Amino acid sequence: MDTPADTPAAVSSSSSPEEETPWLSAKEQQFWRAHLEVSHLLDYQLGRELQPHGLANNDYEILVVLSESPDRRMRMTDLATATLQSKSRLSHQITRMETAGLVLRQECPGDRRGLYAHLTEQGWEILQKVAPDHVRSVRHHFIDRFTPEQIETLHAALAPVAEHLRSLRGRS
Image (tube, rainbow, N blue to C red; front, side):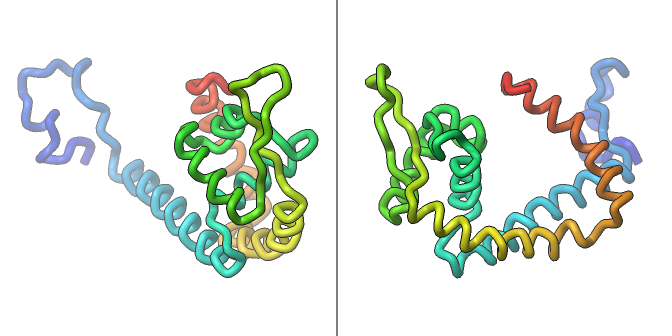
């Protein structure tokens, strides 16, 4: 079933084949919905397992990105891009993380409007403490559900999608 009965393409008989929406097949719909469900459930579960450490998924991601950056700091605009957050949302997130002592905002030398987010020593220590638990969770809930061959196949299938989406954002 390519076109559900209540879709606009099924209702409108005046559209040409070129104008019709390319509805998902039943198999494609199953695949898409399974992807969404896995993404949401995995995000939820990993978030639950970070809660006892006082972190949310976004906190953990920011700590990781900063830890992998030179001098454990990054311009706020670049951090927003790297974590797929708006500048406004990231600013609020960094304020909460500053209050918790995990990061500091620092002025950019030579750029009065620019700011860095800098991983504090406390933030680094928390990340080092939490990372082993997080990796075990990722392994238990995701990686270990696949054979090495499936991991290779899924990576090969998903990498071009990620590349395409990054290119739309200007980040190849």
